[in-house]
Length: 232
Image (cartoon, rainbow, N blue to C red; front, top):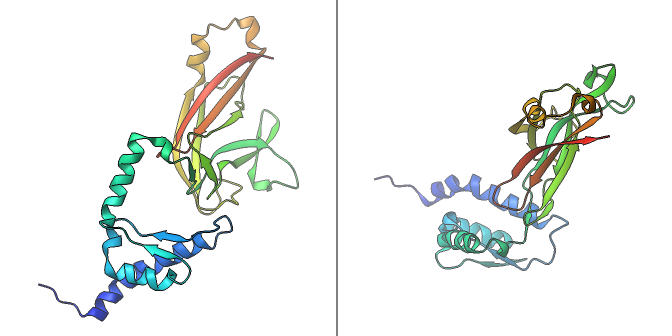
């Protein structure tokens, strides 16, 4: 049996309760958050009387703190209701900034010289972070965001798209601090071209477009790549 003084027990909980209070304060101080009157404390940790006391002391002067019976079951009930009817949640906020790494035309005076890459006598800016959504951006249910890209080389047989995320929304390049790679997609362009039996006489007129889609608003983010061939 391990016995601890109440003061020592309070010290054990202090770091995590402080972080929770700071996070709630940041959310309430966000300019997009208005007219909030109630604060619901749910989840397994919400049963802790120490946490309840800290939350009430920090926010009861500006909000009505509500702690339902069996707060640990609130998460389970919410998940069950969502599973039966996903439309009960019509809007979410993106926790991170998501995007892909691409090559853009190099603009002198705007892009740093160390990002200059020359391919087929064309100047490109490497490692550009093309953002799909920003941190804390409002996202509707099954909202789809589409970007279109062109292979760097006409004879390119494979396209690789890396997906990146960051807690910041002012990212310019995938090499910036705080950017993490969270996924990779491969699109075999050579197999698709052969399967389409393209006439060699028309091949030089074909315009190749890689359509990238991110579907947000669900419990997970879905990403897809589609190759579109058209005659220019």
